[in-house]
Image (cartoon, rainbow, N blue to C red):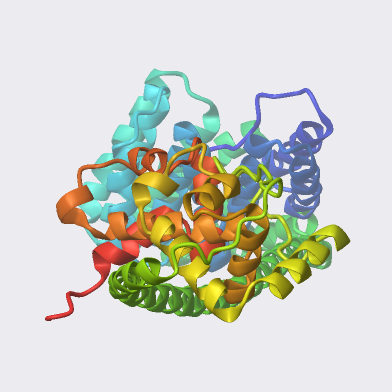
Length: 513
């Protein structure tokens, strides 16, 4: 199997792994396993992924050497996945080569072939190593399939390839051992003994107790097959003695327990991390759901509120239209009434000289004036006006006021004010102001603003005659000098902006619909 020896010598993880490699190369697996486990821990802390993955492979090799193929496969597959993640092609190749052999020992030829095909597609830089394991692994696959002739061919090719390129002796000995195993399976004990004796000489040079114990075991089986019981017993005793001295089962159990404990700690750490992440995700989801519910409720409440507001605005628009129609009829009646009354009481409207104040209404900028905020002097004037005017005089004055106010060309002038109105109705500001307040409960500015805004509503509703006019053109014609003062006055009268009013009028169904 490929070696996972590291080329790095720079930190403690590498040092620990190097010590493990020394014990592994001599077949002392318990000590090697202990060092590899410690190297894993260090490499994880140092974030040295290459050393970490190499240690995983070495641990897999140890379990393969003692025949625990399920466990060794676990480590090989784990290492291969890590190598894929790290995009380490050379390490992927080594793991796949070992996985192929492992599947062969487990008699799973289908998976062995699949892993071999993946291995051969990797662009490995070391072409010598690639060719060696290509030949050697094909020998294992053929041997597992029972095709001993083909297996023998590949092992001989592997042996010759390693010899010609002066590869380390371990690469030469490995295919020779398999040639001996094939000869033994063919019941050719003599040939098997010859192969195993050659392997014994190579194992002595390698100085690896594990390889030597394997050779002794194979020689014992070969001599037993040849009917040479004494030689078989001799090599069996040598195998057991070397195996017991090199492989301390109790020590290996202790080292395995350390590895198991380390992996449990790693798994627990992973579980804790996943639990924390899941808890965090759950909290985030709960908060998100709560926020979504709150936003949904707020959205529904806002929609309901907007719907009610829209309904109220639509109702207001409808009422405003009715009011404008009613106002039009009232104006006609007032004009007829005023003509009749004026012919009889032309001189009955009182006029008090010197009382005409200059209450300007040009742009009505300060319309937030409190209608009830009158001074004592104003109250005194109104009480005086109330005492001087009879009911008939008040009605006559009011009719004249309404007649003037109905003339948009007059009240839309920017200089139109209370004094102008008083002059036009033949009275004074005191009587005019009192009449407006007494009947309508408003001061002059509010009274004028309602007339102008009502006209603005009429024009905004009349698309036929005013559809081409801009909002600015409309408010300037009605005596407003700025959009701000117009919008403020419009909202005070109608409770909405001119643009909202336009939109509602545009969406309002026809009366005949």
